[in-house]
Image (cartoon, rainbow, N blue to C red; front, side, top):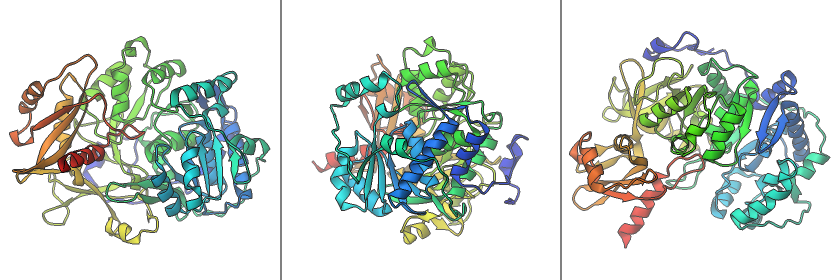
Length: 562
């Protein structure tokens, strides 16, 4: 058990949350086996009309594991998964782990260059992918170590007659019809499962040392880096989640699984936590506000982890008042700042709790969160989780900052990564001793609550003033006509940089620069008020719904060259 010196945040801990936890040192796949033994007939997954029990998911995962071993996958080998949220994504994840492999999660939106880099960097032997992305994978296969590609489609796990109709809907929506000729190296997922044997494989895994996952992150300043997360890193974070959400009951909750499993947030707080606690997952292959509203009501979903844009999407849907959302108990928001207005309106609409959490891929991912049932502070990301230490590094002195002094957040805890795959220099640069440097600027108040000011690299320096986009975005979100906003720095011949805001107005609302300028000047110093506004129908986002600030920055750079 980890022993921490007394920290100010512990004074705010509810008595139900321990300061330190006696962690089980188990593999991730152990919890799927346990759920299948303890709740064999309980629903594990619901997907577009199809239901699977925990015993069925475990059985199919074992079958896939055996087939992977036949392909030459040995303990420690990397296997890529490039799937949307589907039953196959869960079966593949645990199948790879049951085979002793290391999962390499791959975003289905990746283009050929990104896929090629990741496969070569990870040294992946096998990829399991969606039929829609197979043409991209096929083009780069011979330039990578990939020996086998396993293909599946959404239709493969749909009930009759949906499975017959879906290919026609898919072709109409995407314009893509994939014709496959299977071979020794190109294999059908369903064929492998149907021919497989559900036999356990004897493995000798050290949860604290052996990798479960290579999760790629970054890419804004060069190729993405593979974050090495062990079984222990990931199981620790699910155990911390369980204690933080102490009112949840094993085998009883229903989880809305709209966050992508290929993102570490969705993987841990949705999939791995659900499997550990034997929750039922309502799997959504993409973010569909109307579909989610219907599913919450129909399945009485009690948990809905998401990103701010996902809650905004529901709140602004015209049908929200037609659905009963009162089953919602708890929502943990991550990946971006949660505007207070969104939190308040969502809690009013559901009666449940919505709080902001904070973490990074390198921390598996959650390190800090607000209490779902307890004290919380406006604008704060909350307090460190059990066994997690956080401190602020002063930019002025290079030492620990005092209360309310802005600096870079540093994190130490059992969920912090082992390092970056094959990048010892990048790993060394990211640590100060045992402390991971987050790159995020923030501060801690007198009671141990933390606040993010902004990403270190997103800070705007205008006329010598440090300006943090998040502060301006919070003010703009308070305007009743603003649905989404992103603030960046753009070149300015006089100030060096100046502030530009990209705005998505709410449906039916017409906004003007003059009105927004007047609104901002009420709550911001003049040097922080945007000099430019650009109105758009949508903003570029990741699959998790996180606004891609860097895409807007690159667009502005290209404009300035012309």
